[in-house]
Length: 512
Image (tube, rainbow, N blue to C red):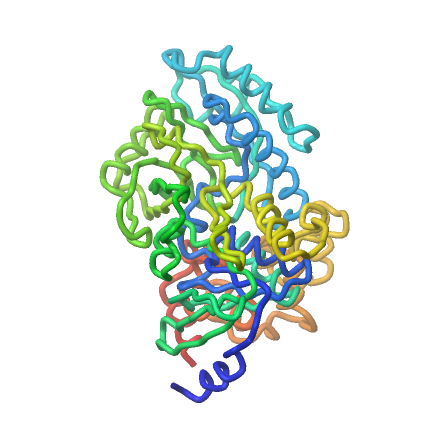
């Protein structure tokens, strides 16, 4: 054991927390933020990196789930639409409106025009007051959204949802939690849970050094996503819960291609099998196509897009767009495994996207496990989890996250464009491209990087492609980055934009 880790273990061992959260995806990070904001002492641990699995593999949408109206999931869609409004208001740096176009081919009989019109009307009004435009019919002969589509597709519909940088949403929730006193430990695995003197004894292990650490907690939340059931088995607390929910693991894969069309609109493509595929602008220079849905068996970290999935997504795209694509056009693929509540549905597409918070009542000390859920409803789920914990522990505290901006998102009542103009005046020496990226990634916390700087040279060493030492230092110090992969894929999507030489320079800087 090296000296620094020995000092760390000496300080941490036998520390007690009100709450220990296992799992650093969107739900775990959201719960940590909510709990810390209610005055609980919080420890969040993840065996890998924050947003290292499902939460970094989404279609990047904050949406109500239009297609779930077909399955009569009205309450779930209503709740998701309300959350869409809350999140858009509170995180304008990482969430923005997205126009979605539904082309309506003449042979699409599964969802006739009247059905889509009725569904979109309901989608417009189900969530109550909203700030996004209502849906409308689109004539592609006069609307530019029809330009990339096949000539025989003459009309369709337009509606609005929101785009989100999913990994930034996770990281910012963790940063927000830490700003309120929470402790965040990445690359730290929970090996065991044991009851001892009315508390949970939590046995932790640094996965890189194998050094051990024990802490205690008054409450524990299992927010391990697709590992929710496996975790309970691994730590020895899975026996004796006869009504434990079942999880259905469903893999979703995406393709990233060079930008395929002009405009900022997304397309929602109906498929003959009843599914839909999203095509969205991505990172300025790219187009994102996804997602598939197929049952998965194995380690979620090993999930990869199969040849069949790639072919399915290419075929889905080619049914609608004049300029077709082929599998070799994809420059990148990614896959994630969603832990859905197993409701017995035959089709993975029909499985509910709702969630369940399970209380392991046979233990006298609170232990909760989170099953299911979706990116859009993470804040509501977190609020419900922490509310339940407060009641179980006899504490009293009000809800707060709906009315307070996510860290970095307090623009003093200004919209993104207005706040950008203000920052442009404050930092006139910073290239516009870098300023835009900083504001989109960090929001108001970009000032942590730029504070007291008056010229570009003061940002420190330039590693290439607009990446400077001051930003890397911030990510290591304030966002728990320890590798180049952490930085270029989860704390940003720079991996799509920078050269191999720049990546090597970042790796060398981190190593030193």
